[in-house]
Image (cartoon, rainbow, N blue to C red; front, side, top):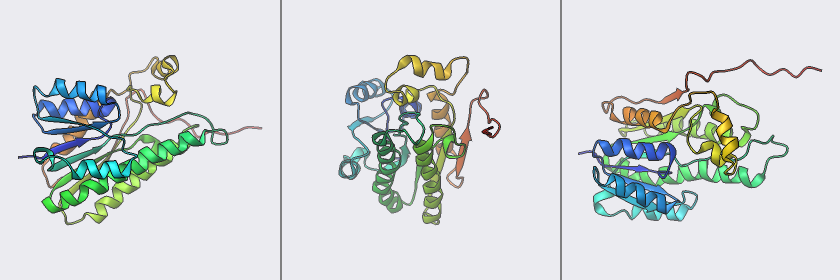
Length: 251
């Protein structure tokens, strides 16, 4: 029987949608997030279809991550899939005026939080001889844009870290996938603009962006493929999003 699916940032967006998708298959779930009230509500809803455990966790807290993962009760301790979804973008200012606190928060969450969770789970997977780490990256790792500075850099780290994990885990029967979404209508922009709902709404005006359910379906697909298949990386955009010409500053 498949083991537990551990999802970080599960109270909204891709994390919540992934929890719902895996619950429809009756998978055992550990859902972690900082917003405990929303997490508990989601767990109560999903418990009709799956065994679900809620864990209040800030992935930036290294000790809390290890205590939580290593201290899971027996029914949930066998983590088979880790979905490193917790992450955020803050601000859209130019690097010369950006808020350093925002930069540090992105590094602490998108990089440190991801490596803490991965390092805590991997020994369990190695011992079991199987497992799948799914990292949520971003197209910002590949395609820079004004104001993307530290956010894009953190996602470039996720991309390279995922590649190196594949190299380190060769021969250990553990899969690693980096999924890189483009424009997605979740709480991403609301967080980036510090709760400014009108500004966040403008990001998606006149577009048909990806939804949380779209990425959740992709996550479920890559994890449900036959065990000998590894999707290394998958970049996905809505049809309405593409690349533009290189910027030229004219005198």
